[in-house]
Length: 167
Image 1 (spheres, rainbow, N blue to C red):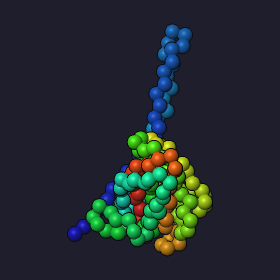
Image 2 (image 1 turned 120 degrees about the horizontal axis):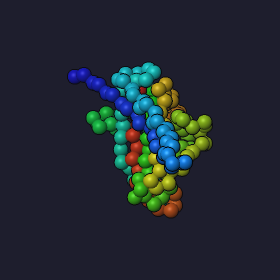
Image 3 (image 1 turned 90 degrees about the horizontal axis):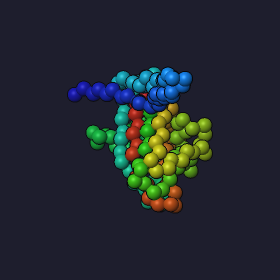
Image 4 (image 1 turned 135 degrees about the vertical axis):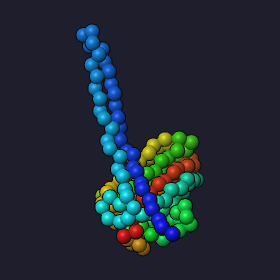
């Protein structure tokens, strides 16, 4: 049985602005960026692991997403990421709580963050997209936990998608 996977990360902003000046329209276009496409495999620009899940946290609770040995993909396989290539976290508009991403107490996955204590906050309706063609190293049992914490304001429902490579 063969396996294949193509992953596309869409993360850009396109703008078209128009203003009437001196009897004519002046236009400004900011084109969107090209998609980041990962072919199947490992190495630069390649991914062979995909994980996606809708998750919920009660107010004042948190969870650690273990990228090397606990998350299960759509095929029932436990993923063991060696390099995370992209992560999207979407704090759904139906949420009340703010999500804080990063800063696990131990075994922290630093990924796109500068260090183990750095975090970002996502208010309801916010989305964070991180992508790296090279990937961020995951080290099983010492650097594989991405903490997601919910504020005391109320529950949060979020969606997470990750693509990675196994080596």
